[in-house]
Image (cartoon, rainbow, N blue to C red; front, side, top):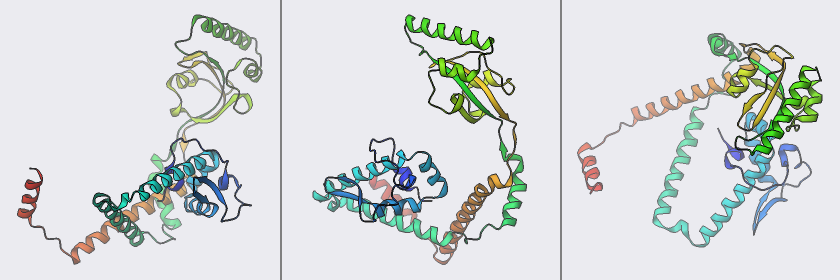
Length: 303
């Protein structure tokens, strides 16, 4: 599976916002440059081609975080800039680099060819195959219990000075008192929380209970819908969470896992087909190795 842009970028610094991931390339011509460093340009057509090669899950990642595309383009520019410098110095002509390039070429040809001869037909697996796989794997297709949480967060790092501790404690005492007085939680979020960047009620959204920080999970585990936790001390400060809703652990529906099952079955079929192809190739072309000569080579290289 091609990883394209998403695998190219750690967290880098370029910002030209969104591009195709947010629809901003719609009015750009294919030949226009969307990024440049020195004399090096990246064209709209290159970006579009890379985006079209991504699988749906990777496109979904980009849609949620368009900055990944910006970072990837910066990474490409840096790579091409270094390449330009290397080529100007004839770096690729050195014997060692030439050997490395030939190995990379052989690997690329071999892997792409094996993929081409082992890729399953487009209509595999059938709906019947998928239903059978679903029924056979129901016991492990579990969606864990989920909580929809909101929080009041009072920042207080572990190594904060005494003044900061006293200020945070005073705010915590005020919040605790108002909660007992039935002041609406959203109102307290607006007045006292240091984290207000989220949705309504500083909502954290649906989170699998197993993915919560242990302290938060412990504080919220016995809360019913609408329940509010005691203040929970963590390294960054105090957290008071409210359970807006919950979903019990359940078996995933067929529709929820259908595509995941399809990809898994196709990958397994391709893996087996690749092994079978190589085995048949070896049957038609038996391998012969001179073990004595091979040992001599090993011994001479160890000197």
